Every structure is written in C-alpha cells, then in structure tokens.
Length: 532
View 1 (cartoon, rainbow, N blue to C red):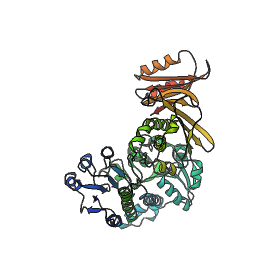
View 2: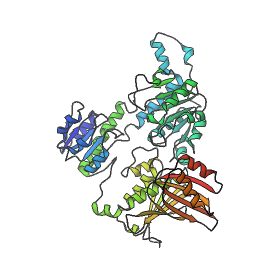
View 3: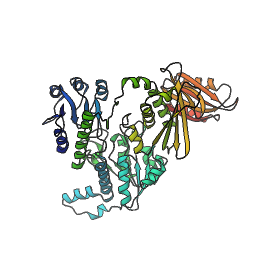
C-alpha cells in the first residue's frame, strides 16, 4: 500500500509508517503543485499532509485507490472534505498535538503583555536604557477571563491558577462543576467576563456567533486598561475596533498570533501600534507539537488501513448499507432536535437523555442517531471540527454526557425520538419528534411538554403569546410588511384565552425590526429565532 508524505512531518512519524512491511512510503522532497502531484497519487492509498499541500477534488479524483488523507494538525481547510466523502476517502486529523504548545504561547503572550518584554528588548537593541518606560504589572492577583474552555482554554486556566491569577471562564457548554474542577470561576454570560477581567484570552473557533465578538460594543464593557490575547482565530476580533480601542487607551495592550487575513499586510495598522505584540501564527510551531502531530497521524493512518480503526475522522464513518438505510430517516430528525434544544437551552447543560420509542426501539444500531443529536446540539459551540465521528469525545471534552434508552412504553406515534437536556438534576428542556406518513416527512411534535407540529428545516420564529383573537392575523401582517413569508404555522394553547406557544417556519430570517415590534407587545414573550 503506497503512502505519499506530501509535507514535512516528524521523522518519528515517518519511521512508524516505514516499519510496517505492508506500506510503501514515498516522502516527497519538496511541496509539489497540483499538476506535479497528480501523477504521484495515481496509485496512492494514503496521503499525509500538513497545511501546505492542497488536497483538491482533482487530486482526489486522480487517486482511485485513495482510502485515507491524514492531516498532521487540526485544521483541514486544505482538504476538500466533500470530494473525499464522495470518493469514499476518510479524512483524519490530529487535534491533540498542538494543545499544550498553543497554551504555552498564550501564556508567553500574557507575560509579555504584563512586563512589556518585546518593547523593552527593541529599545535595548537600539542602544537605549529606558527602565521607566517599561514598568509592568504582576499577573498574581489579577483576573484572567478565558473565552472558550476546550482543550487549550483548560490548559491556559491551569497555568494561570499556578501563577496566582483568578480565572473566570465562559463557554456556552461549560458547567459550573467543570469550571470549578479546572480552577475557574463560572461565568454564565460573556459580559460577566468582560466586566471582571484584567486580561482576556480567546480560545474559540470562528462561528457566526463568535465572528467579531470582540468589537467596539464589547470593549466598552471591559475594564479600562484591559489586555487581550488571541491565539485562536483572527476573525474573532474586529480589527478596526481593536485599533481604535488601543489608540484611546481603553485597551492597554494586546498580543495577537492570528489575523483575519494572513500573512498580515505590510501596511496593516496593527504594525504601527506600540502597545501591540504580534507573532506570525506560531501556535503549533514547536518541535514537540510537530513531533506529536507526526506520530499521531502515522498511528491513525496505520490503524485505519490495517485494522479498520477510525480515529479523529472529520467526515462520515463507515456504516453497513442495511443498517444505514434503517437509521437514515432518523439522522436529520435527530440533528434537528439537537439544534433546536441547543438554541433554546439555558447555560449549564451537562447531560442529554435520548429515548427511542415505538419502532425506533427496534433499530439495530442507534449510535448514529445519538451522534446526530449530539452533533446538532454542539453545532455552533466552541468546539472545532465536530462531526458524527468525533462528536462523542467532543461532548465528553466539555463535560456533556449522554444517556440512551429504548422504551417499550406505549406512545402516541409509531416512531418516537425524545431528547431531554439536563443541568445537574434539573431538566432544562425537552423535545420529541416522529414521522408523518413516511420517513421522508419528519416532524418535531413535542416541545416544552406542549404538542406542536414543526417541519425540521429553515428558520423558526418562536414565541409565547396570550390566546387572543387576531394574533395570527397580526403576525402574518407584520411579517408580510417586512416581506417574510410563512411556510408553516404551529399553534398550541393550554386553555381558551390562556397561554399559547406559536412556532412559525419562515422562508427567511425576520429582520430585527420584526423582533423589536413583537417584544413591545405586552401579550407576547420569549421571542426567539431558531435556525435548523
């Protein structure tokens, strides 16, 4: 079996592959262009890459024997995942290799900010001796706000505690118990971190919710003189807003390893800021991290090719055709239930309970459905590259446990999938789904213990309202005025004239003006927009 190592990885990783007699290992002496690489992959069973080589659709289609692409590192944006999946090629990465090294770089940034080390060094090299310019501050006794408590954020928190810092952490999937176990105070909102922190460090992926989350509005909520570190993703910071905050003194300093566009432009305003520390995306650039990634990628490729073991895969796992056909209808239903509950659940969720009832209890393998529920629930979380292969370990890494039960208790529907979300012993929210008429027509039929009928696609507008005459017409007129079409409507009330739950499937997201008007109505509450 031919394995082509396209980018430099640790010699120990290469040696692990070479010691297997089943493998023919070809190590390319330099990075090749797409055209140069095409003839090299014609009989390849596996490709090993870092970030330099682009595994495009053209390359994948030129490799009929290709079974696995191994990425020595976390990000797989240089691999065409869709093309690989269609080709039947598993894509694997090495998410654990750069955890410690990125945490250590973060702490180097914190120390450099506190003691102005790079600036002092620059003046010494220039022949100066300006001690008074570089009076710093101790980390001990200061509050560090950690945004994102995944692997790296947790490691940073441990180190900060050792330095005598008070750590306050925010993560949508962080529980108070898990925060306390890692030596951090629990923040139930990001604003709580903004108000309290002397230093703030970011360890979140870029999502619609986190992109530009550190912006002018966020900076106004922070302490005067706050210092910020970002070794995660450049797009999380609104760069123009940070420049303004640095110039005004609201932000006393920042240390950045990542940027919205890389390499950083030669004329970028950041380069002119004296209170900025800049490094060229060095998060994983240590000998140890590269060695770990090289060894890990060799191990996952070997395990897959020789034993069928799938670890750290970022696309669909193998599932035999017969079982897949049985569970296939439940996958979009399970994912939709997970997405719905994630967007409605308050902070502090630490357990998901999934009940399979009716015909669903007879499924030979419910694991893919459970994974679909978890994947939906973790969509938009601070975790990176969550998919139905690694979703169980991803859930465990944020302290989220899952319980599954097959129930033979009588149910109203032929198929029944019920998901409950708990925080400690308290049930936070639940929802149930089934199929109407055929497996191609899934519906959410229970929410907040209330009967509903919700198709599982598009944008939902959800609200509680007083059961009054004209409410349906009012909603329709308001949305029509803003050119938003209603695709489906579900109404459920407790009693005539009492309280009702209204859920609208919309063809497009309602503008903020619609939400603002609804919130002004005294008979309407809990207005939410949900994306399925």
